[in-house]
Structure formats: structure tokens, C-alpha cells
Image 1 (cartoon, rainbow, N blue to C red):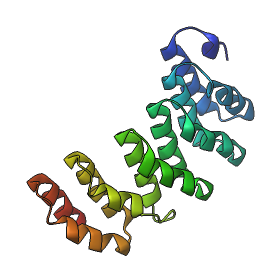
Image 2: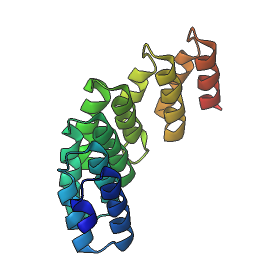
Image 3: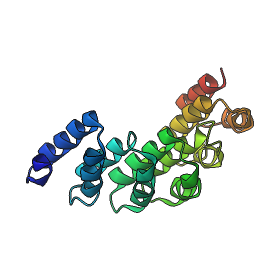
Image 4: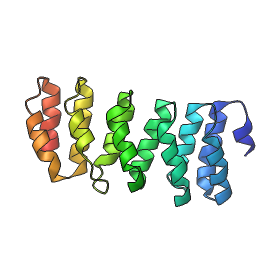
Length: 174
């Protein structure tokens, strides 16, 4: 725990990574306290550790979806998607459509595209993004979902004006 109390952000992140390898309840409790660290990278490292934490950690993870840092919100969306946390679906759906950060919106939408979460609408909306790279990533995520509900929106996206987006959509349909 002394590594977490130092001034160096990198050292605090390294200490959290070491705690993750331990997997003991005391390690998770120490990491939970890191969720309030001033440095977003430390809070994000604590979230990453939370993907292997016991289920009672999930409310703390869900609360991090409203963190002031886009890095922490994005990391949390990914973590909750990996955990297939059904209780976070509504919050992830709000992030996927309303967050001011493209990376957060995409991470939340991709978390929802997991077949176990089965909420594709945010990714389908991102097929119409002004940002061509967001459209490419949305097509790839829809492909990874493996859900047949993704087919019609992908077929419509074949008409995209940008050639590399059309290529990505074709690949998503293969």
C-alpha cells in the first residue's frame, strides 16, 4: 500500500498493477480507495483492476461511469462490458449517445454490442457519425457483436461516401 501513497503517478499505477496480481480482498479494498485518486491514470488503473474484483465491487465501477475524466469513463465502459454487467446497460447506453467524448461514446457502444449485452442501437447510431473513423470502428464492433440485427444497418452503410468506410463495412459483412 505504500506505493499508493506516494507522489509519483506512475508508481501508484504500478502499485495497482502489482495488487491485481495478488487478488486478495485487502488488495481490492486498497484499489477501491484509489478510485478517488487525483490522477485520472490512477483511477483508470484501479478500474482495470476491478475487472477481476469480486461482484461487490461493481457499484463502485458503475459510479465511475460519471467520473470527470474521459479516460476513466472510457476505461470503466470497457471494464463493465467485459464483465457483462447487465445493471450498467442503461448508464452505458446514455454514455454511448450523450457523452461529449468520442472515445467514451464508442467504448460504451462497443460494450453494449457484446452479444450478452445485446444493445446495438448506440453502435448503429455511430454508423452515421460525422467522423469517418468512428464509422469504421462502429462497423467493426457491429461485426464483432455477431448479432443478425447488425446486418441491415451495415448494408445501408455500404452507401457511405468515404471509400475506406465502405471497405470497412464490406469487411464487417463478410
